[in-house]
Length: 256
Image 1 (cartoon, rainbow, N blue to C red):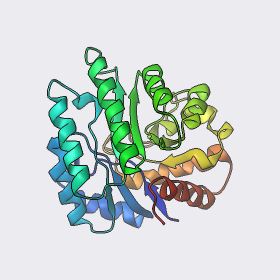
Image 2: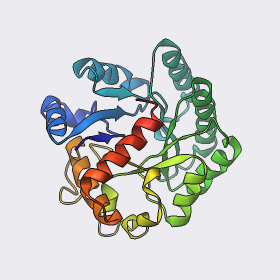
Image 3: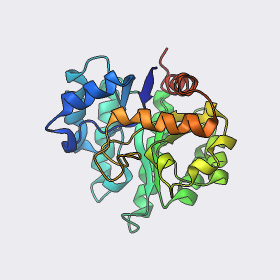
Image 4: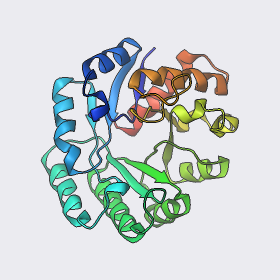
């Protein structure tokens, strides 16, 4: 059974002591590819080191995370543009709007989000959206930017059925992780109403570990637990679930 973790922060300090073991465990569990979101310029070198340490396994994104959009965001966006001009990336992410941690920066978060969507269109890359307490704000910008050049993943989707359908209408797949296994996560109650072609799997490691590891450090091997729960939600075999979601991910990231 081959799986893809479409969103994992394996360069995080949370894995400093046992990164090799974490990656090996994931590979042994059937995780074939790892997609690595950027945060800001301070994580760039760590991402490159990770890619070098695990050749052919790590697929990097470039972008400025909304919680890193601060006074120096122009400088940070310049860094994003410079890196994109230098080498290949597989997505622009994670980008978006976060009003959970910081509401005073909304205007510059919106500006950074718009500008990075334009970069994604320029390079014909998917976007990977971070949205926290900000569905309306994110959808307003997707409405402005919608069209053939706009596509990607709504990472860590935690909205309702209506919001899921709206995200899909903007050519987004839903990134489903550990939240689907939570008793109070709620998304497991309606996901079966969404065609499986719109779903990809992720962990967001080291955050949001699925049940039975909730509250502990998440790791990419646990995408298997997400797949198990999703197979139950869709009432299909884990093999079929893995096959379809893996194909969805490959298509989004333009990999054969």
